Length: 230
Ligand SMILES: [Zn+2]
Image (cartoon, rainbow, N blue to C red; front, side, top):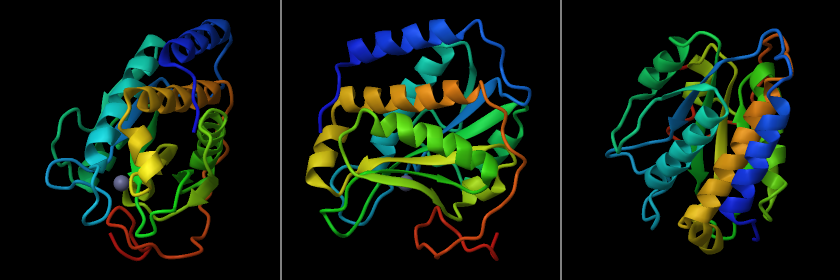
């Protein structure tokens, strides 16, 4: 999986931000991004026996994203900035307290099958879906891995969030090659830059009205819930 050096990426992103700056934002655009690093504290994330803890790389990627968005003039709020556990309702409440915001949850994936690889971005309604599509496209444009596409899932934080919300799975920590990459600052910076690019792009477009789509299958991760619960 190849990727450009962080320096090249950083300057490309600043150039893009500068170029886009004078434009007018879409009518229902946002000024705040609530960034949610998955897991934390006793909750390492991933699956039992996983070598690389998801909570650590998710937080680092989220902090990098925060820096990039702040540099681009957006207000940011972190659901956690340290290795602490924030219950899922608390995360949704933080997001819902922010007017004019979007919610971006940062995760890394896991599978009992070590060959599973790639990037996928989840959303729960039509607004999240357009944002998910931009973020997914931006990441895939620079990460040479499987494009697992944009998906719908009953993630608790997405369903409880009243704002446009996405959850990005930035690669599989159970895949030896992707875990190795995720442990490099260069990869985490690149992913953060591409998520930032998708977010900044979205500011130029109005969100569609919120319509919820039906889930096709049930998932069994703790972050995901059945529609009938909670
Ligand atoms: Zn996770």
